Length: 460
Length: 147
Image 1 (cartoon, rainbow over the protein chains, first blue to last red):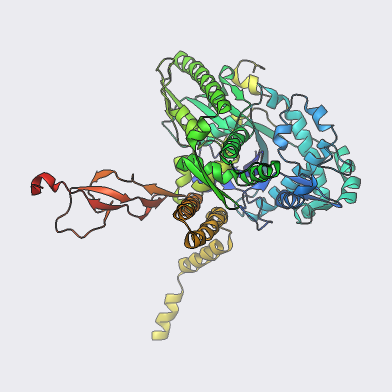
Image 2 (image 1 turned 120 degrees about the vertical axis):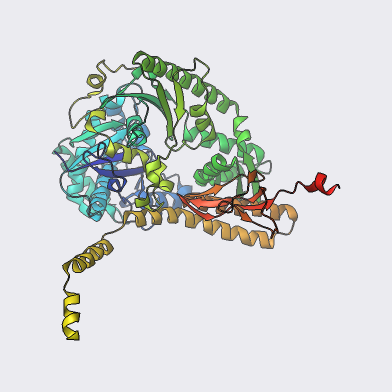
């Protein structure tokens, strides 16, 4: 029996981690939730977010913010950092993808396969976790680890669990050798890595970690401490690469997923970014040459997080580029044909999931369903409108929307400081709080999702 | 005699225990503080942008330029507020029953108004109100005054 549970949210843009005392689910105290300061070693930016990036430089390998800064500095030289590992981990033939050589723009020396770079990043992440954990005097004793992943294409995430814990195991072996040098701004010497990495990987054992679906983690933090929470919860998770809808049912202490109410759309945050940038480009009549358009596109993408946040919060956003200022509204985005197709598909998928959940809730004699939006797109007005919509296919049981940030995140213990950053840390926090019964896979064992639901999890 | 009294006053153990726990608290890195710092790191960037835009407002040579710079300045300020968890209270232009605990009256009035119109939204953070919404009395005097 461990004293603490630590959950890693291996995000597309940032990785996050949080810990909670084992059993916190049933004896919840807000102060026991401990998000980890993974970037404490780096003074730039938010201490709780670790940039998911690796950059292979001339003689060094850089990680996190240093990797991004260096890649930006060399932007004109067709060099890029390896990012979005999470998207890579979603491919159907993962082993093949891992054994592919990294593209020339990422590894000009032709030294590394994708697997090597992912292992190196995970080693960096584990080093950051170790340092952050030591910083928090509350986290002491035995720690159980788990990671959060979306339920990509049916049960694939659980199916990939063995590969992921193997990668983490190799990363842990390398971290033990490299130590805190991994966290240095200067990164690691390439020659030293080339020598040490294969040795570390060869003797590595899979890391003992559980897997929790992101939707389940969202359910864990949404319904915790609520005596009146509904038995069924719909989760709409709009991340960077995919928009996932999942449904969970809680009967007594058991929580299980309804596989028929699972949907994944290929359009998500990155797609919305492109729609916004394209609309802005269309509006910028002054940008005529390819260079002007490329410059504007790059600038828009650099500031997209802020632009999108403002657009979602205020309904309009202005952007300054050199001596040009232009303003766009949500309506401009909604006029886009691709967006309209996405919105239609999302609505149809959501309505299908609601129907499945309603059927299940009715069959079990339950009368309440809740819906929550999570992920980077949770604040998008169209996502909020979706979970608040009065569904057209039947009306009972009613679906009640829940806020993206739960009430307990406003607890006095946090002095008003958790709520503003909660959406970013939510999955890691929910994953740490969730009891073992909510896991999709435990330790290094095979998936338990099917066993949990009482019926085998289906693949799409 | 007085010295003896002093000595007994210094004796109680609970006081020293209190001191120890306070010292421990000071030594422990505060999670709330770290969270605040994280929020500030992002809010600082937005505030910096607002300051730069304020210069653009000053140096604008046309009304259009000034208007655009003001919009960008407000946008950056709003973003800074959101990063710090500030939320707005009330709806601009909304009419509400006057409540001195919920509204700050803009004009000096002889008689407490029954209804007010929100002229500027207030600001809250978590459960605390930082600035009350500013409101003006709703004059329903046209018929009364016979104008």
